[in-house]
Length: 408
Ligand code: PMP
Image 1 (tube, protein in one colour):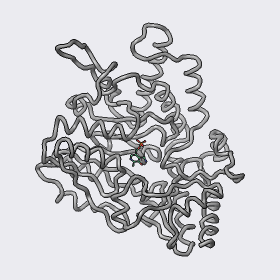
Image 2 (cartoon, protein in one colour):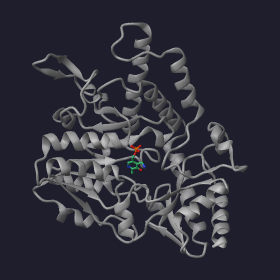
Image 3 (cartoon, helix red, strand yellow):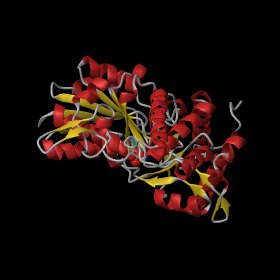
Image 4 (cartoon, helix red, strand yellow):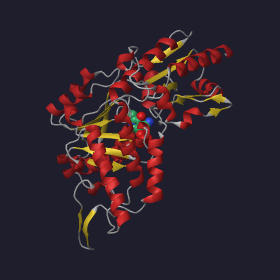
């Protein structure tokens, strides 16, 4: 009942055919980064080969062609998340830079010492430390929504956490450790009722299901190209125009200015105000091809397949003695990420031995140490899926875990 041809899709990702330690590669570290289809790689190679020139400033043919590709990518991203305008699409290096941009510019212009940001207990460090840096610089306070033992947000506590000093809420859409899909629409409704804007960290949602920033009504949305079949080094900050207009520039340099004199400098209009320096215009083109690739398969099919992989993986994992899965046990509440430990086996040992069997998983704290503290563990083994993974790969994972378990 698969809605696309999995074998054909896998041919688009030649790396999936390689071997490690003379074993077929089983790549289950997609939450860290996905592999890239030929379509993305070919487009980028072609641009470097045939078009390459700096964007926006050149009068010459190549520069205009490169600019057209770069700005077409912005339009592709706009469509991908259904933003109203291209002015609302800021290219960044990734989710991390997008969150840092908001934390820095928002705190500078909208927050004073003692004002509060609310995050969640399951954030990636990028959505904790960005705010902590502002706490150190400007004395803002970072609060968090707690989670239940099975990794679900205690959303009923949000109202109590909000005070007159709360200026922004910043939450992960999907946890990169637990796979939990957070009720961002509900969070946004609650925050907006208090006139508080919301940033959604979409690093783990944008690759897996359709995001509509207008329907969600978030004020900011951040994601990374490399986690959704696009190149590294490119990401996106979506912001509602009214907010982006209010925020001061993040970095200074070329591209982001209107007029510069020793006395006074004025800034470019959106989105360029936030894009200092030469952008990675080849990566933006690559990202637009990744979006094209996703669109051709369609999120309905991708989500159905990944949901089935998640369900199947959890079901199979639970047949293993000593298995502990973190986060919701209902696969439909999770998205393409399964974190676990087996008995007393250290996650690093499990990951290292699985690697010897050709299976790539992630181990450790997954850049979410406060979450690890909450769960009372030092780390987990994490299997995470992409559209090209197969049930056979999960069978290999399960057989691998059994083999490693027997060694202990
Ligand atoms: N937030 C979440 C939820 C993530 O999973 C990640 C990547 N692991 C990030 C933020 C940071 O993304 P990047 O490293 O691409 O900036």
